[in-house]
Image (cartoon, rainbow, N blue to C red; front, side, top):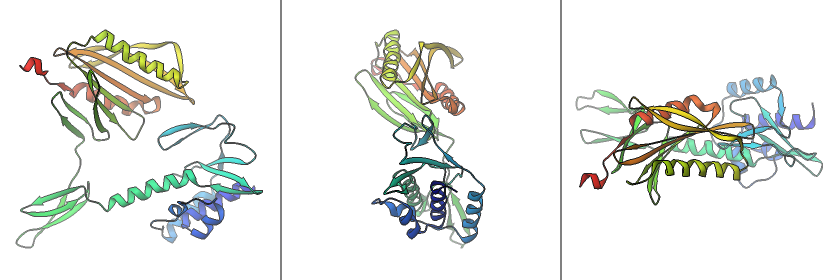
Length: 323
């Protein structure tokens, strides 16, 4: 077994055991290194099972030109990452599948822990949130703090215990002075205003994201669509995405049993194919735009989010029309 492979296997063993001494010995120093041994430790049977699984797996070594996903982004392995003094390993274990960077210092190989510390810090933050309560259910004046899918107990006057729980609806509802929206609970919503439109952004843990644009009365649909699509194309070219000679293709979508004409834009970067879909139409004297962005690998989820938004978005009359 090579020195680097032995180092990776010993390091995963140390993570499984949350062994502070071994982790310190195998890693380069970092001010947040303690994140690697913080938290609940697996019981002995769980640790033994994880080590047996590791013993049956090969260690994958990334090469120049390969890519890996980390913190929601795709990184391409370049010549500076893979050298005589730097290597990146991957272990095909769900819990320990993050990229493991190795650096040679003073003739000895060590784990470079920065990437891994970031992963563990996010897990620690998620565990801390489990102890918080986002909701309070009030029954007959009694407050019961609860999180989603957590079970609480309410005692009636006669001593009977009733189980109380909460769950998030499959779809969330939003309403302001301009729109009424329904969207998947897997999405988070934010809103901002620009000079001539309101923009509603929907993001998910996967790659799909959506943007709903509501323009002021009097906006020209053709000029608006051309400006938005051209802006996306210019940004992708500036970021050195690969685009086809004719970047956009005609597309269609359904909206209230009517066909909406749109455009699809395919781009590629780091061997990952991206799709942007643009649909603009006029309704109640205003221009609406819905833009879907995703990686092709997440197209099923993206299609579900998109079709629901297209079906459920409702535009309120503008103040001019109301007056």
